[in-house]
Length: 439
Image 1 (cartoon, rainbow, N blue to C red):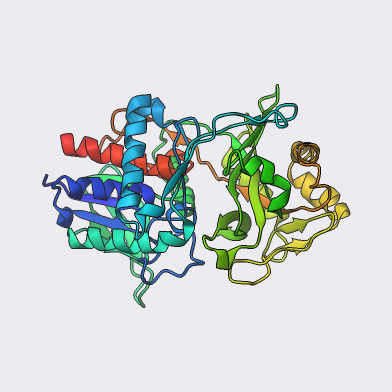
Image 2: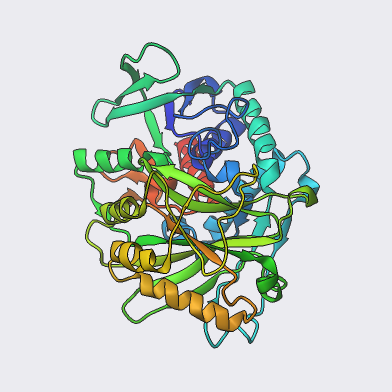
């Protein structure tokens, strides 16, 4: 246990890896975590993309408890091991939770008949941590790692990595001096989130890393009063409507938020897209629901660049679009109007649909069928355009430790390995840490 470990990214994957290491006696002084964001005491609530516990661990208090979604975890380690790793992630969130007794698991079993003519309903167990507890969890978790001797470099951007010499270059963004500094590692855990995908792509290109291409994942954030969906919410709180077509295109509702549900603006690569979150507590209740209608499109050449171009094309005046037959943009959890440019049906036809290259019709049909399943919905809804999951090509890794096949001391985890979700990302980090501890 004398190897210097550098973790790029303080998101769920990197933090779980570090925790597994120090829990089992690895010297914290040999672990350094580097992140472009801030520690949980300095990080503002609206700073979603970077910082302690990343985007998911800062804003989304739901941990999906199944291997069929969120990335192909069981592909690497098998079903039984994947579930064991997920258990460890959930245990860590419980361990640092200020009120662990309020955590609960929803596990819907039976698909209701009224859904079946129009949609499949994907029902999975979900652990509900509570979004309003996440910031306290982050502080408790951070304090534990610091007490164990783990070093954190905040407001720091890694700008290049030399896999052949085990050196990396970084810039400390918080100070006046922006000179490039040099660091060294024995093992590198590359655990960047969405904001680091460009960097991951650059490394893949620089080293000609073999990869597995991923499909495009793009759509809209749908919002409506919760009352229209209550019959389904009573069965499955975090419901996932699903549909797949013969040409391989599939759509699903994604990341459902209820009761005190707010649309959130995300800014990635200089462009705006939308997501959602939910506050916990009656003081935040707005009786709204929101969820992504996310479309997966296979067979697109360079899906990463295709998605970025789409987002750029539907951004107007520095923000995205809002369309509704009857409603206006809603309020954020800070009681400000969600930043979006309201558009007419003509704009939808002339601007949005061309940007989606003919695929927007699938989203329209999805909404039309929701109106049949939820007949009170009618025109009482709105969509924020676009919602996107940037999936860079998945680098080929050694399945036993998630190390690059060409550089065995470099491990890719989380978004860098196409994980989609808190539980899977954290599980990947723990999986790598277990391998380090055993060697």
